[in-house]
Length: 367
Image 1: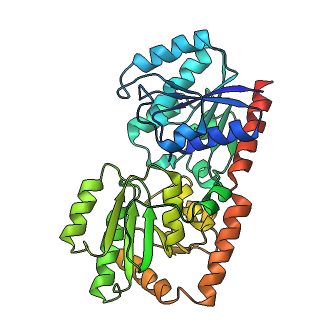
Image 2: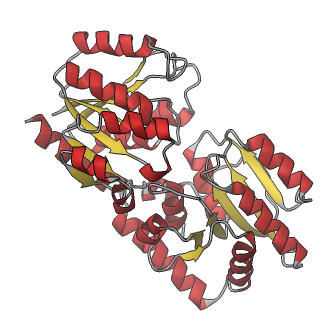
């Protein structure tokens, strides 16, 4: 029964490490506590996180360069004994690796994104402590492939453990109430934090292309989430004359709301510049949606041969593909595509299997 301390920057219902931690505690004999470095209370915990009943410790940091949470983490590790410390984020994770090894703990590290897209400071900090974990875990073969020669040389052991989805929970959320009203049209949906990585500007530009080609009368775009670029994206939507064509849901604090939205949607669109895995795409697959995704290695790996792949930097090509599949949405070809994608999500990306894989790794390392 390994005792494991996860280290994350912040905590929300969309946090992949938090979902994995909850599954590990539910399905295995490992005990995971989540240490949140950059928040100081549970006053604003999402309802989903509260329902998980995870052991959570808030170390109360206010930013990457605030040393307070690291002092508190140091003291906490003197008082509470763990077998393994498991950091999940870049800068804070690097400090966590150092503190964990200083307390003679085993260290497991997970890389959740394409390392080639780290900033230079992120890359330097990450690389400097890459030799400390007993195992570096990657959420896809593509993330592992993004390692540079120095990281490969420093890493003691590399393992790929795919992220997973809770297909039973997804299936039960079909009729969950949404906080927004959506038109009775063909819905093209994107779920993702509003950042440069997720490339939602080109969703809006593709929507304008469809409108200019008179191919948008029966479609509606939904962008579900919030993030640093939310105001800019809302302003761009207005500037492009898309107010009647695009709905921004804002942040959805309950996973059931996201799943319900996906069930109501017809096409999932994810033109990300890069990804490590993209759970949202796999959740869409689990809902039986055709997926239009960037033509990048990780999407071809995760989504497989039944995905529809487009250049992420070409709104015209994205629009063309959306028009084509919109016209075919009820065809036998698209129905077969839906079923193949759903079966792939169920068979290849089970959250329970993800939990078991981490448990086996923890048990081996804690011996």
